[in-house]
Length: 377
Length: 262
Image (cartoon, rainbow over all chains, first blue to last red; front, side, top):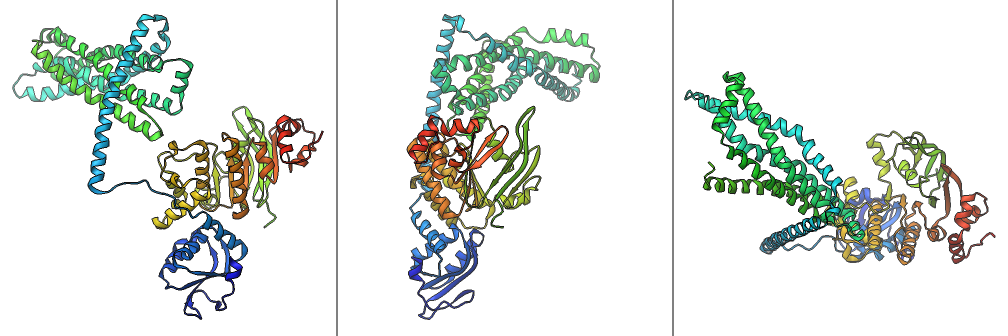
């Protein structure tokens, strides 16, 4: 191809573009025609008028990007190429062979269609997630039933290990958080109540709000952030690395091996952690009122006994395992939904935390209404 | 300059804790050749490649690539050398959140950010076609590709900057024989046309016979021999004999019509 094109006689030696003998513009390239000069060369060629002749005789080096720019000028504008060496001609041939209509970007419709498209996908995803969640809940319950019938399959080691990770290792952070919440509630309460000379009611405030609401709620939020996210990430990564498929083929049920230990651990640990959080909050509040309001610890404990009904404790402790169940369910379910790539693990982990915290707060509101209406005020 | 090796390794030592992988290892890769690197599992073929491309800092030794010392270079200096090579990792190592076409565009965009998107897309599309992928592969994500397609997409990305030097880590592992033979042919034709130098780690005897100019054998923590396959077969190193004159080695040699030493 190159040799027969090399007949054009009007290739004079100078750089850049010049008028050719037969009215054609001659574009002469000297030096290296590589990707480094690709943008400039493409711009210069685009600026020239047809008919165009490209002179490659002074090129010292050409790569496929350079060849592509020459080739597409030949293809689109019928330009003539002169002075190509055999190596350059072979490169030109090669990019010509690779000129196939390759789709680079996925199809994406524009405007209103796209909005409707996304809305449709969102709604159907929502539906699928809901159905999937029900299915997952069912599979978990069946798994529990199987374990109850065949208690030998109970993975005691896995569960004890989860107890440690979910419960024992959370003691430090939950204790500190609850202690500070006790202090903050006491401090804010004292500032307001002092105006009426009713500082003593700070104790009512601390006692009732931490035992009835904050102890359990804050613990649930902490467990969702600590353990719910970890469940989703662990199970999601295991799905990507095909560990879950491997388990299935060996005959180990992923629900029994992965989901149930995590679920049991959160359900059992949540009330314990919540109780611990309540105690720590009371401790924080007690130290605050002792140091700032000069109420001695004995008076504080006595007053707590008088003003906090035991039903408050029941309310806090009844909510805890339910919240734990929701957190583990959301975490494990989102983990199982992971498919494809590593970005999905991150997305599902975020979803697990957001969903579980949201559901916990919704349920907390439902519980508040329920317990008030049965007279546990 | 032409006769200088494109990769020159001298006295390389690599170890992980107590375990010494390489001890006093020397290897040269000549400009324009396809050098096959073979060795049993755990002899440090991938570690050697990782040391050469700067992903693994060796304990001691000299490494020169394209005439430049590679050890303890600053990131900016290393970048100029990195632009001149392409690497195909064992499993493709495609960026999983980008499409195939976007994967190919990553290195181009990194080094030539001023290239306009239409030209960038055109470059990506001919690279994809050149690597033997089907035209509909461009907008697909790596998780939607088969193993063979993933390797080709990885190759397209490795070739994105028209490298002088190509590193391939077991390019035919996990491919069916037909796909493996096609991949060998692809490497061979690209090598012929793009004036590539290829550093090829493989276990595939057919690949060695079909496309390698020379073969380097890693054993006993160093390169025990480098040469053409007939040259290697005449040596009496036990591992080399086992490898090339074992049942599989003989079968591959017979099918490529090379003399088998009895």
